[in-house]
Image 1 (tube, rainbow, N blue to C red):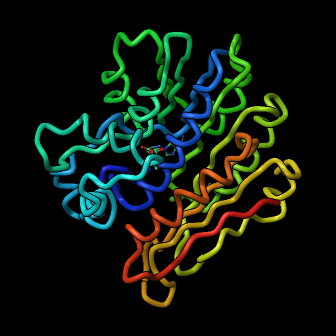
Image 2: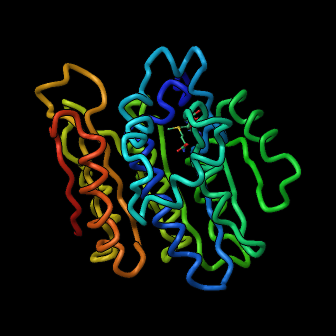
Length: 280
Ligand SMILES: C[S@@+](CC[C@H](N)C(=O)[O-])C[C@H]1O[C@@H](n2cnc3c(N)ncnc32)[C@H](O)[C@@H]1O
């Protein structure tokens, strides 16, 4: 396992994923019934953008730092996400970036809980330390694809959001994910799943593959593609990202249709790339 998210913290892909995450989590607050947030590839709770790793790639420059250009002119859908980012900073600069566990923690009410999982030893230790003594959070140190079907369904929580955010460093990642998702859906068919994918110059659109396509429940999923560059303008690297939302909230497409165009205007490089939302 070579992947360290610290090299990519606060990138445009993090911003897109985390804005979508905040939009999903807000929906859970509409009902009093408890919910559980599950993060199979949790990473760290928080990332230092001044670290050697973050500065080596400077991905925050084309990500979270672009949001500073908005000044105080923030659209409503961005406010919950922005508030979480802002609360972490000690001055007006953005020097620290929240990971998905910290973002989700902000939404938990006393009746809700969060189950995190991370396989990398040091990252797991740091994450466990970060949420030490938080009675609403448990942290596992397992392989995500063994963890996922094993943890579901979560006793006493009929509502759950499951974030699956792998690094895609292994050639078998998509096949492993598909196999685990098949088992997870069998055990917990009505859970809400949010799965992140990279878009590269080699794969500028979401290619699900036969097996994954077959798993998606008909008319119960949304697919999002978001790119900030054209495939031809990048020789290598991430030009976009995609997400599948299985069992999305009612009218969630409308919320995305409001947020994604503005987000794309802020993040795109010279108006390249684009966004689309589709159902299948
Ligand atoms: C993209 S990062 C997660 C970022 C985090 N979800 C966020 O949005 O802030 C992927 C994480 O998965 C971990 N990881 C990689 N393979 C894993 C596996 N098979 N099981 C569990 N964790 C894994 C990596 O160590 C890394 O911390």
